[in-house]
Structure formats: structure tokens, C-alpha cells
Length: 163
Image (cartoon, rainbow, N blue to C red; front, side):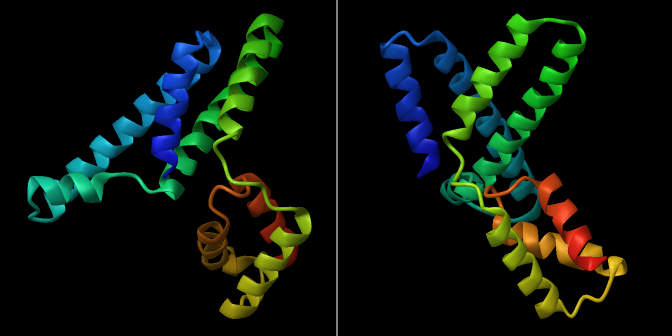
């Protein structure tokens, strides 16, 4: 499981005194824990579960962890833009290193051809005809490519195919 790999890599980086990697993985672990706590809170409100069941069900799946990682990468990219505007190349470099570390925990990204194939197949399955069906197509495609392609890229491709 991905969560275990992150924990193991964190311990290894800590032992090897890799400050940058320790910092990134510590932040990632904290975000995962926060998301699990939120999930647990929601489940406790919706269902009547025992402590063991709550703990098991609130544990994040790999796909949910990919989502956490992707949002961290998205945040870092926004930071890079701001740091470039402020001519802070030292911070740009730091953010790029963080992105590089985070990307190692994502599945291999889909090629343009693979993504287009998935989108076309989904459009055919749903019988989508035009842009008015974007709201039906996007969630189904994102479900299939979660973690393997950024949402902005998927959205752009879906628009192209529906136009």
C-alpha cells in the first residue's frame, strides 16, 4: 500500500539525514492524516460503526492518496508561479525539488494517445454528443484516470473531443 511506502521512505530519509525529502514526506503524511480524520468524522456522522470499523473505513485508498499528492503538486506549481514573479529563484528551485519527490509516488502518467482512447471510449459509452455532455463525461473519465493524468489536461482533451 502507498501509505506504507511513504512511511518507510520517510524513516529511511530521516535516518540518511535527507532534510528536503524528510520535510516533503512529513508534510505529505500530515496531509494524509488530516484527510483520514475528515473521512472518519464524516463516516461517524453517517454510519453507526465500531471503532475498528471506523479506523478501517477511514483509511485512505491509494487513489485517494494520489489525489492528496496531486493537490500538493498543484499547490507547489502555483507557488512556483508566484516565486518567479517575485524573482525568488531559490524558492522556485526548492518547490521544483518537492514536486520531483512527490511525483515518485504517483502512478506512471498516461500518454496522449492512451488518454484520448479512454476519453473516446467513455464518450461512446455515454452517448455524449457535444459540450452539453461535458458534465457527464468528466467524472467518468476522471474515475478511470485518477492519478494518471492531471484534471486540467483531461478537461482540455474532453473539450476537444466533444467539440
